[in-house]
Image (cartoon, rainbow, N blue to C red; front, side, top):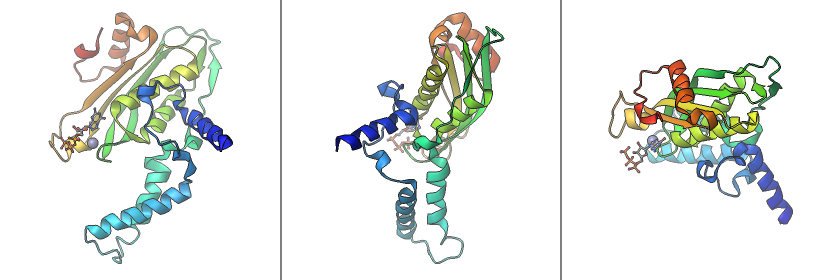
Length: 232
Ligand SMILES: Nc1nc2c(ncn2[C@@H]2O[C@H](COP(=O)(O)OP(=O)(O)OP(=O)(O)O)[C@@H](O)[C@H]2O)c(=O)[nH]1
Ligand SMILES: [Zn+2]
């Protein structure tokens, strides 16, 4: 019993949330890792079949009969793949031998996530920056970490914080920032149906809390957004 609990805790560490402040943790049940991906696909397939059946769809129809299986595969293998610690990217870092001392910005990283309130897509761009404290990270790893945390049921605020906290841990510095500008289809396509509005969230760690550093980062990413509300 105790051993099982230990294993569970280790897996939560692997998922990358061990370093995340409690407010930014993905709300997972304690037994979240007891269910294999194969079992998840099986259960989701049955649930989707039930939804379509309830909607009155003909599940014998050639176009629809494979839908429960397709949705289950897409959810577990792609759309919610960031819930499986095995999919966490390895954030390889290197010594900053060339002593690059300025900020590095990886901008316009594509974000495809899923709103956890309606299970509808969140589509946008993330802009990530850090200032090296001795380590540098492979550029693609920033895109990968954005994608990993995006592939969960999310709210944009939590996604932004998880990205920053994961990179702070990998790089061993607080000097990391992230801005996300994204459209929520739950706002654009249903409900209030505002097709134009988008949501901007930001998290500024360490030196990025200072006015000039924050300004430099925001100048590099130059979005068509009024940043007055997030400037110091
Ligand atoms: N803070 C935050 N809210 C979100 C995010 N994604 C969706 N929401 C909001 O979650 C809220 C859920 O509100 P509810 O009143 O419970 O749901 P609802 O009746 O479907 O609300 P409407 O969307 O206004 O029709 C909505 O206002 C969504 O716009 C997000 O990433 N962050
Ligand atoms: Zn939503």
